[in-house]
Image (cartoon, rainbow, N blue to C red; front, side, top):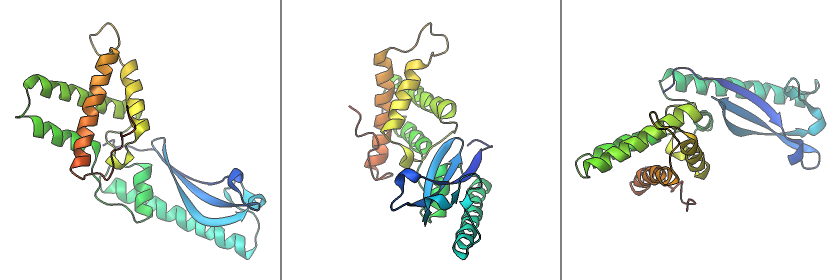
Length: 216
């Protein structure tokens, strides 16, 4: 886990989603440049929104009530973030969102399943195969640190885009001591190993879906 996080919170209104000139106020949570959005379930006329102050304009009872509610939401989300950080959890925007909504639980992480897989195959596969999985796992960890700015992610955060981004990272990565980037075949081997590791989590019901099912 990274010992330092960047955290911000911003209320937003999207006029493009307005209906009858009214739009819902959303709160956008950002942790280490990764975002999560929550609906406040409060709807106002678009022209009542102060886009500079991120508040409802005016001194009417309705405006004051919503602004007070936004202040409360701000306080509660900050508290969720602080509790996660204080308890030593690795913090993500999705994790803060889940805690605020009361949906957080002891979710499994990618590094947990990687470590479990390494122990599982340690005495059952050929040394060369074990070594290859270890190398692929190290590339996953480098990808998380260099591209995702974190040391871990929840399995629930994995999706097709994650796999595509990992492929791009491998294509552009020059292994130490190598004169050129990885071949297409090598890149595909690393991706296949990652898929096998994550499929193990799916089969063990650590996650309720196969996040890479779209990959051909």
